[in-house]
Image (tube, rainbow, N blue to C red; front, top):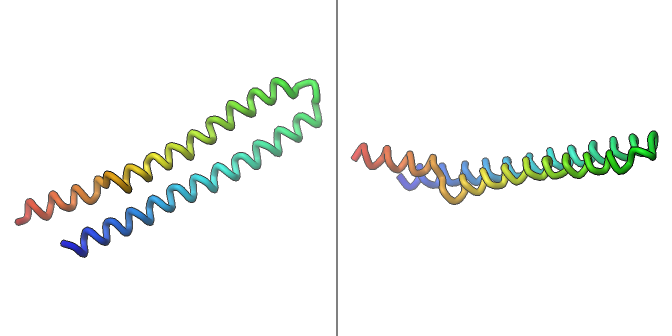
Length: 95
């Protein structure tokens, strides 16, 4: 039983690290593309900078929200692991 618990905890820690890491990588790539497109479009039409800047900040907030949702899911799996509680319930039911 201890081996099962430790295996579930180690896989959960690995999954949480992947969720947070890939979320950060995706957000970084999204911000890079967003910033590049903003600079490109503001260089082509300087009179549109205020409108484009507003849209830039809205999309930047949405990009941040996606990575924060990933952090929340990773914290859920880390501190309140549903897989561990299900495995413990199965082990208790078997005995």
